[in-house]
Image 1 (spheres, rainbow, N blue to C red):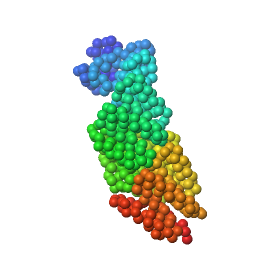
Image 2: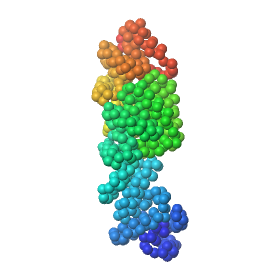
Image 3: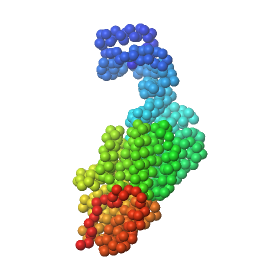
Image 4: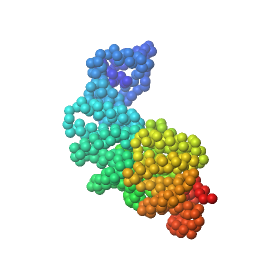
Length: 533
């Protein structure tokens, strides 16, 4: 504690207090010197600290409650004055003094700034503590327009921290952004209106309520077009690209992502990540564009977009943007059937997300790592990790990720010989996808269903062909050439086994001939043997 602040609290001349503190230090009683501070107002003050926390507790307990309140208030006011316009730098310390000094107005202000400071350091749990306390203190203040604005500020700062640490779909996130949206409408024209709506979009997107997410994305774009702020236009285009990707409308997704990518300003991206749930929207546009390009039949361009996303995220020095780039890169390479690349991406992702306490990233990443191991022949450990990861994702309620994990697990268990379990998992995934209008993995789920039907003890070739035809129908409707090629490959193999070689060639050749890149990537997972003898 700097003696200049302490002097204000005990109403003693600074030189008198300093002499007494120096004497205690020399006697090695209770306190020790802790350097010197120079405050922005020019105050130069020696600092002291208790030798042991127990001394602090004993001394603090001996001060009467009323006196403690006055000391904290006076110390806080003195240090606030000493820092002046730079008081935000020591917001956490000032917040403690004003909370304990029963100065709710100042306490709320500095708790908010302390939360912002923690967010900038990606210290999300610390931010949640400050901001939640700020909301609690705010309830003691009269209901005014200023209080409504303060609550909106606190909730908009709290939302991103909750998304990272608890997941995007938990009730706390919904309550935070729903209240923020209501406050923004109550206040009127306010800069927080757009990010509040964006938070709600992300909530419904990850819940798999895609129709609602698409409507909110359209509303976001309308707001952005009204203000013509480039960062908001980027956010809105990225949101719609993201939603249309999961709806399976890849052309629309690519169109919106391309428009968003043209608006990326690397200098502004870290600020966007700070405001919008821990991810820079430029990174979102790039990773969604990468996965969309693969679906549309451009696997090499997809990798380049993914690398662009990684480079942007690394340049921002922002951990959650990088985590998203790594997660979507791993997703892309599952499509490309490059298990070793998936494993490498996830191995880089998991230490960061585990240390920061991000259960969704950990669960999804663990599932992807398990898939990579299983595809490389390590079925036992791979399946165990996939089930563990899926359980974590399901517990978090993220429907988008859980459906993807179900399809991957169905593939892995089926190839490992657990065909009935694989078919059950696919039926579960297809039920969710069809109920939610989910399109991004629909063709692959039908194709895998056909593959597993052929791996049964008694193969069901007729029903497998129906599944392959369904996969083709979905892929063609989506103009998804990569999914179409994969489905056509499975069906042509079936027809070859049935002796229909000409039909198999006529089906596969035009699809394969359409491609101009990506010839070094496999079209499917572990190949099956011909089911007929």
